[in-house]
Every structure is written in structure tokens, then in C-alpha cells.
Length: 280
Image: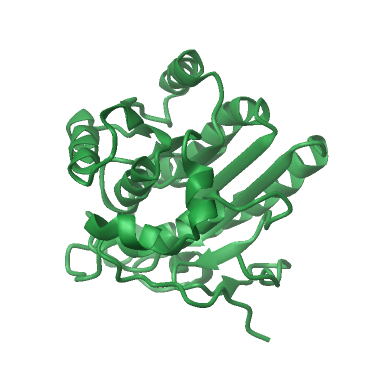
């Protein structure tokens, strides 16, 4: 049986968000207002689109990434869409550096005291090698794994205490169809995304077990192809990921935890985990 959330519209123009709210019902849209979210990888692509959408919904959004100028572009674009000027907070950070991560968490705590969600979008490709599993230098492999996998683990572990203060923890890790694939020429990237999938599922189970009183929802979203720095040839907008992202981040208590979703509404299986069997 195929499980999916129907009616996901991926083509809504972001400038018309007041009319379509990226497909959210009025009450789900209102649920985002006033909440705080930390977006890692917010300077470009999918992270930028999700951050901008949350800001237009009235959420307070902490924007992290390595490049300050790119994060500034996200803030300017959010304001151009009509987001309130104080909705976005610049928080440059390399999450693979634990000292920088600790400082960033302290800054979030000092500003907001607590957060409701974390979105992890940072990733590096294994480009430039025909046979990267044979040719990729070890240091490139290690940097990719630190960015694509270890950073997500460290960021979730660091941010979770701030989410547990609210009793609500929404963590969304952006993966890739590569995590289900063995495509030649993309081996290290495939491995990193498969590891990220397993990490999300394992963290979901562990945090739910260790904090049974909290509403923990840690899930994976596959954004598909769109025009990002890693895929300049696509004509799809990064905003195609926003409707499913907002559905997950605004989900009420009792929702999915440790599940896998595609931006087009499909519910995916991974390993021993079958697809989520309810509409989001």
C-alpha cells in the first residue's frame, strides 16, 4: 500500500504566501507564529526557502551557516516578501566546529530562551571525481561526513535541551534520494545520506524513550531536485520543499517520529521503518 499526504502544491509563488500559506490551513499557519526555529544551512537553497517561509508566518528564525553574506541575503529576501524585520536573527556558525556550535546555542538561549524546532539543511557533495569511492581524498570524505552527518547529530544534541523547555521538539533533517541509492559516481554522498537517515530514525527512538513526557517529532524530508548550489541546472524552485516542511514543523502532538517523507507528499520507507500511515 502507498501512503501519502494528498494535495501538496509545489508550485505556489512565494510572493503570494498571504493567499495560499504554502498549503497550510489557517490554524496550522497560525501555530507557527511566535515560535522559534533554528535553520542550519539557511544561506542558500532549501534552507533559505524554509527560513523565509517561517519568517513570513511570523516565526522567529535563527539563520546559521558558514557564509555571513549568504545569510544576509536570506534576511533581505524574507523582508522583501513581507516578513517583519525582527523575525530573522543572523547566527553565523560552522556546526562541525563544536566551539562555534556551543557559542551559537548560547546565543539562541540568550535571545529566545527556548526553541520549538531545528531544520538541518547543510550538505556537501562528492563532486569532481568520476569514481569517488576510489579517488576521493580521505580529508574530503571526512569533511563530507562531518557536514552531512556529524553536524546534524551535534546540532540536534545541542539544540534539544532548548526544545525540551517547551515540551515540543520538531527536528527535520533534509536528506536525499541518494540515501536509498548506490549510483556510481556519488558513492560518498550516498553513504552520507543513508547514514543521516539512520541517524534520524535512531535519534527519534532514543529521544522519545528518554523523554516520554515530551512531544518529540524527529523526521526526514527528501526535497528532490531544485535549483540550488549543488544543482544549478534545475528549473525547479527551492520553495517546492516548503509545503511539506511546514506541515511537519507545525504538526500537532502525536505526529510522526522517525519517519521519512518526500516533498511531493509521499511517505517513504527506510530500513525496518515502514511509511507513516496517516495524513500529515
